[in-house]
Image (cartoon, rainbow, N blue to C red; front, side, top):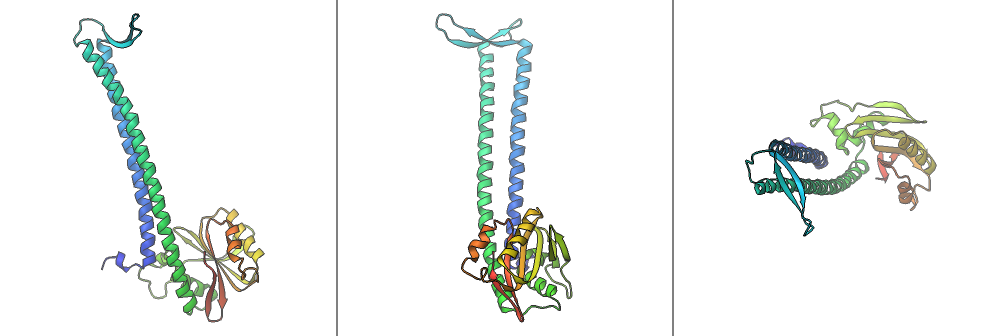
Length: 280
């Protein structure tokens, strides 16, 4: 069995999203290298061609007064080694080569933009699937399982590690007996104190315990975190009770109005476990 087969579906999806990001960066580097290489080659070709031309003469424009036409002509410095027609043809070829340089750069730029667009679209689709899996995992683990641990902190972290691959990765693929997540408690962010903070590769995982949570308290807490400019990937608000406004049909619009750049979930803390009020 391969190492990838040992991962859960959510963890494998998380790895796929990371690989997509790496592939996007590699593509960007390759396009940039290609553009620079092409530009250098053609520019050096033009430079050496001009150097060679200047050894034997110069290219100038000849105006035909009768027809009004303008033509290019090579005027040699001395004894003519090459025919004027050959030199002019070679010069014209170089001009077309420079024009082709711009065309190729344009095509490579279009390729890069297209790959970027498609890559972002695929990443967004994978992220949507991951969120659906997290939602399902939330419901299975939080709604049907009894949390393990002696304290509120241990219980919520043990349950959360079953849902989020970012936390699971901190424990290792084969969780050793007794190994716990590295976390900090009572961390101050702005004028708020968060009960639990776990640093992960995607940002901080934050848990805030409430006794009775109101819509105003949740909004103030969320805005404080947003203004802190900290890199946050998930926030869990755990309360024994939420006010009527948060338990009403307006909950969805209330959460959307917050305009958060991170995911925030509302969880009921009950005697025998947890139940979900809002999953972002």
